[in-house]
Image 1: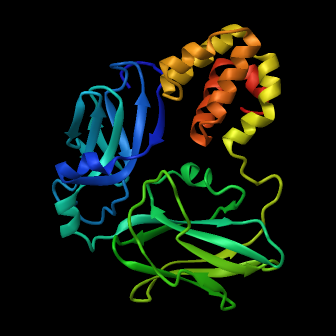
Image 2: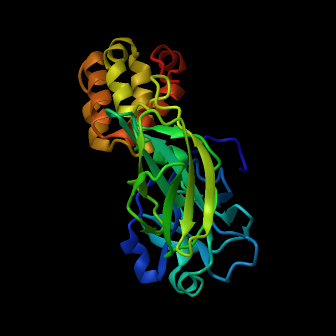
Image 3: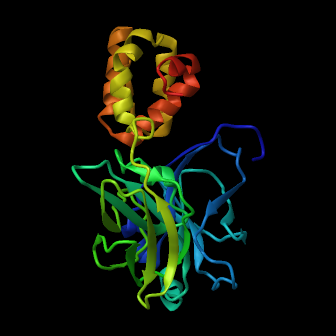
Length: 324
């Protein structure tokens, strides 16, 4: 930062068709970043490389996508965890691999993570979802899609190799697991599905879970406590949170704060100019009802942005609505 400023960002979906002609492929999430021009001079993007040896030259770079086109920024520095670049201005920025370099180094492992989500019991059975992902995928992005399953907090770090097959084994009993094995490929969303499903009995309190590579060598091995979802731990999607507080929001939000909220949502890219103009018409109640319903119907990501914006514009109201 070269001056004090507010920076807002969210992840968006890659369009691989833009990268393919340039011989690039995604190597991390794509970020949509908003900040006053000139406020930020450098950006540190998380990578998933294992830095036990120098990286092949040209393997990693940063793509900068604007309305005027696409350009690639060479790293100033690659640390153990991040790629550092100078940024002329913001829009869409994300890490990319050079396809040729990645293919030549296909056996080079990357830093991965094993994420576990326990679904609520159904009858005498429960399902434990196992996701194998790159280490630079934000947990919040994955957890938002797993509702109502409970995230099991556990050490998750492991090394994974792109294109290699992995399997899951569970003790003390021979539980049913599907699929039998799965090939690991980088996945940057927007949808994250379980790599494996482990079918458990409802009364099982703990299991030993192991992820093995295709040579049957363990890459991750943990004792997993199965506490089971409780009402306090169940993840509630943002759009459902808005539905719950819809009536209170409509009756309590002030008109000045409503106008500021619309400006924030436009800046986040949640609504467009036409939707903002539509939401500004009518009485205060009409405007409040239009904006919360408009955003709620756009899904979890837009609804999460709405909550963030409301917390900034009206902290008191967001606290009253239990959205802070």
